[in-house]
Image 1 (cartoon, one colour):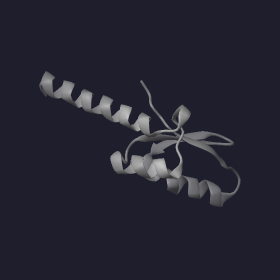
Image 2 (cartoon, one colour; image 1 turned 180 degrees about the vertical axis):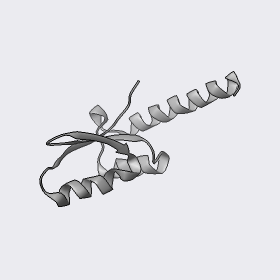
Image 3 (cartoon, one colour; image 1 turned 90 degrees about the vertical axis):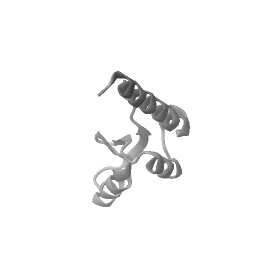
Image 4 (spheres, helix red, strand yellow; image 1 turned 135 degrees about the vertical axis):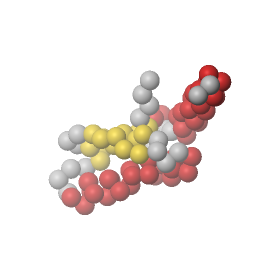
Amino acid sequence: MSLNRKVKDMDTKESRREELMGMCLDGGYLNEEILDQINQLDRFAPILIRCGGGRMICSAQDVKHFIKIISNEGSDYVRDVSLHIHN
């Protein structure tokens, strides 16, 4: 892989991260509408789901599935959902 290709990939990743952060509510939090928009832009974007008893990180495409499992199981609840940006 050439250096030019690598730099171009990094620019794309950085611009995508900035675009995703611009879609979020204050603090990086997401509502269902924003989550749907993120799924259309990058279905593999890392999303943090915080529950009463723990937390997990999953792809944007899987968030609704895991929330449904947590809600249906009944022993825990979802506190919030946010974009997980690591440096």
